[in-house]
Length: 189
Image (tube, rainbow, N blue to C red):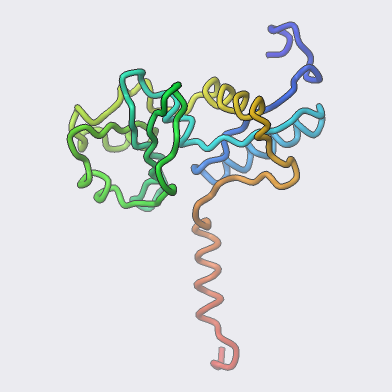
């Protein structure tokens, strides 16, 4: 990639990375790669929420969008964004974990949805509510643009503190916690 652009890795001033929410392993690999590259080249690193990257890619005629990423277990990560004057997207409230059925039941006229989770159940949404499928996947170019804008505004992340945005613990961590709670000292176990 650098060769085709006539650049060297040391020419890079900032690397942007999508931090989630999403697949635990995918997020870990992406964040580690971005941090390693930033460390090796001395460039800055900027974290970009995956749901923000999806919203920022929405069609020009969309002013608010609900973004959905598969959270497994019959649930999705969901966040609502609106477009401000000047085209910047702002998240309205927290990223939540919601059952698919609750998302589908909440659809109202005027709502628009985008995100890779829609690939699993597009037929359950009214057609008016869906952004075209070409806008569902987060794009590296959008992550790069959002990261560049953040860096220009001085909003860079600490290389050593940057972590993926998991929202919840993994199934393995939850299972370990349940086992630990079931094994209470003094209960004869």
